[in-house]
Length: 462
Image 1 (tube, rainbow, N blue to C red):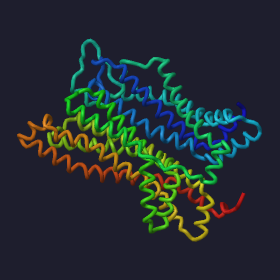
Image 2: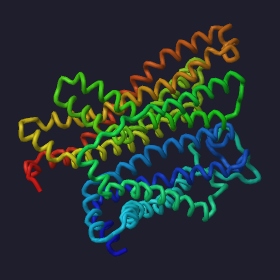
Image 3: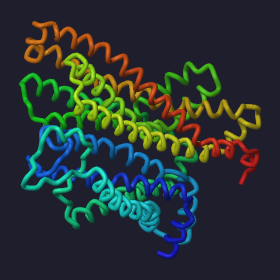
Image 4: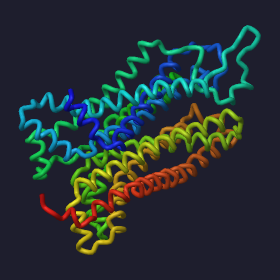
């Protein structure tokens, strides 16, 4: 225990802060979800319509679930940070008699302890948000009126998660992030360390992600064709498709990286694509949440097109779109930090070859562009697939006879279809632009580590 505590204290404060921040966000979101699920059909408080209405409340829960993906993705990338140095330290402990189980327990503690601290802060943050944007309780002389729905009241106050539920959320979040530390500590195993040093080739990723994507799309088509109005069914099918997008990211990274490497004409392009091909799974997981951002951007673009066609400019719709934009911005921030952490890991693991490139005359700006290329190869195709999959289901709905018969008669169906077709390229451009901006910002954040990696002292042999 004393040794474990000493190793925890020896960690970089940046690593501890990022784990704690991820844990805090991963605690706040489930607590809000629990509060929403505890609400009755007719809450006795003023809440924004999306939260108040049971038919749209499930969408708010799904949005929070999707937000957890980039948050936990950042935690996983931070857990991977410095894996080689950590493997050497744990290997020394193994030589002195520590068992693999003890080593993995130490690795789990390195992430679980700061995660526990962050989870406690997340509980406090939940109650602070509840006080700021919580619902206004009704008394015997007032009633829920649509005129108060535009007010930004998003967290219920008429219901409160029980202490055991709060404790359960803290334990689950801490355990999940601790499990990440346990998993990455397997690199202390001599066989695993040998495979990393000698680069024993692994099978390329398989496109198994298309299976849940096809299941989700087929289920949505079937649900709309039979006329189901079950919100829960729709949300489950969208969730299945989202899981497929996450699973597909490493395969996309490998395929695109291989194609770019074959046609590379610049140093930065060759370096970036070669690193992706060498480790597509880690690179793909770092930027996988960006595909969910594209999914939401695609779906939201068609919803906006429908609002324009039907001239729905009420405060409810405007505020709802702004809330979606805020969630997308939050997801982009966490994904950008995950990409930045991945770039730091790349620079740390390849200090000597990067220093050799710098000593041979490669400009530092060219190496920085290789990092941008590496992240773009993974992120841009993933967000493109996400945008298209987000657009297609809603666009197909406009072509169904049950949906469009009346609208086509009065010409609104043609306007709706035209607006949907126009919104697709706009959504693609917006998704790619936001992703490129996030990648560029993430790369700029790691400039101090880039300068350290290009130092001539890294050419010394140990």
